[in-house]
Length: 155
Image 1 (cartoon, helix red, strand yellow):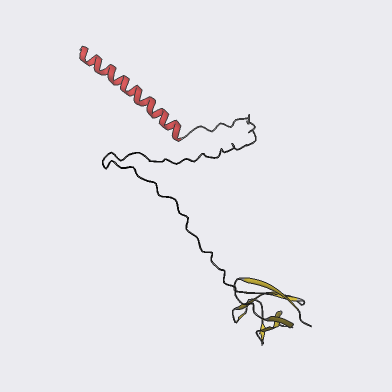
Image 2: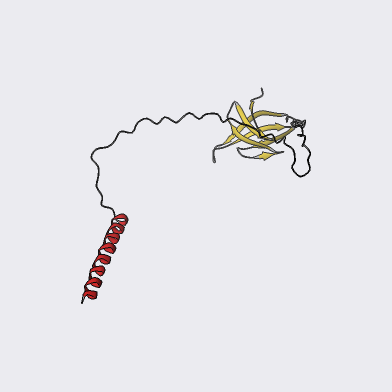
């Protein structure tokens, strides 16, 4: 009989412990929603100033225990870096002579002279790697070789 009482007592303790663990788990998964009426005013954020790191080098100028010699440090030779020469692309000879407007489609056609050849272009057209970006009565903007150039109306 005593053995059964101990078993029941231990069973009750085990169920109590597992019940507490289960309760904490359920509360963690589904927390109750309580809105705090008091809101803490956050202080202004001020980042900490970072200290500059101190750099150091380890100089290993001790005697080699196996060879019995002292290693001489190799001097740091700086390589002469050759400067890359930027390739200067030739500037194109572009001039703007005028434009016309198509009343039906409201499209503007600009007369542009590129390297001596006259071309009729609308916005976003490309001729000899020259793209017409924007245009008005008084000027046009063209782009070529990564350069955007504004060209005024030639009289």
